[in-house]
Length: 288
Image (cartoon, helix red, strand yellow):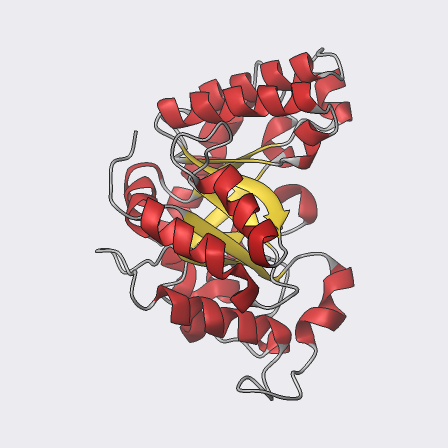
C-alpha cells in the first residue's frame, strides 16, 4: 500500500517507484473470449484479478472501466468491489473510471460511493464529468480533499466527437473567452491551490487525451503543470509514447499514461510480460 496523506503525494510515490503506466482493467466481451473466460460477472472477476496480479510490482496504477462491470448488474459490481480491493491491497493505486457527474445530493452520493474510506467501491480516485460546471462537483471535491482521494475531470478527450463542445468558447461570466476545456483546466487548478502535495501535484486532475493538440483547446502545457493528467489515447487508440513530450511538455511529470487493450490483448499468459514491456518503454521515454 502506498502510504501518503494526499492523492497527489501518493501518485508521486507511484511514479517514483513504478513509473507512469496505468493499466486498464477493461473486460471487453471479445477479450473475455480471447482469455477463454465466460462473458459473465464471474468471468470479468477472474479477468480483473489476473490483471491486478500481473500489474502488482511492475505498474503502480490500475484503472477499471466501471461500465464493463455494471453491465452484469449487481453481480458485476460485487466483482468490481473484489478487484479494486485486491488492487489496493497489492499496493496499486486504483482510478475508478466512472465518469459520474450531476448536481447537489446526487453528485455527492456518487462521490461517497467511490471515494469514502471503507466503502464497498472505494477507489483512490475517480473520473468525473463537469458538463454542469466544475462548481457542480463541489461535494466530491470536498470529500476527495478530506479523505485523501483524487478526481480526474474530463477536459479534452481523445474521441473526435468531443472536439466541438470542448473547444467551444464561453460567452459570459468570469471565464468568458476561454474554451470549455481550458475553463475546466483553470478551475481544477484553482481547486488544487490549497492541496498541493510535497511533490507539487494536487489531488485534482484532468483528462487530456494523447491524440489532442492543446493549442486547439486554448490550453498550454504551462497551464497543466502541477495538475495530474489522466492521459488516454495510447496503444489501441493510435498514439505512441513518443508523443508524450510533444503533447504534455512541461506537464509530462504529472501524466498518468493509460493503456488497456494494447496490454490486455496479450492474453492471460502474456499480460505480465506486456505490462513489463510497456512500463520499460515508458521509463525510457521519461528518462530521455
